[in-house]
Image (cartoon, rainbow, N blue to C red; front, side, top):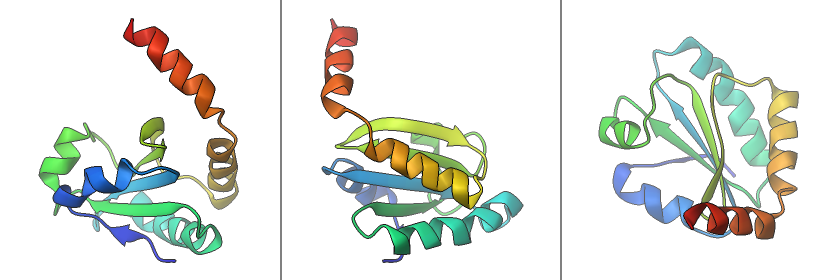
Length: 120
C-alpha cells in the first residue's frame, strides 16, 4: 500500500481512527525529506495494517502551522487517535522499523490511564 497524500480537510479523519498512523511532514526541496521518502514508502508496502500519510508542508501550510512543524522532515505516529511519537529528522530504514515495532508494542491502556491522570 502506498502512502496517502493528505490535505488539511482530511487530516483529522485519518489520524482520529483506531490503529496506527504514521505521518511524514515533508517538502520537495528538502534533501533529507527526499532521502527518507523511499524508506517511508517501503515501510508502507511492508506494513499494510498501518496507515502511512504524507503532508506536503508547502501545499498544506495551514496544516503544517497547526501541527507546529518547524523543521522537516517531521515524523509523527498516532495510535488509536493519540499522538505517541513526534520527532524531526530523517530516520534510516532499520531505525524506522524499530520505531514501528515500538509503536506496535505500546500498552495503550497505560497511555490512556496516564493521560487521564494528567487531565486531572
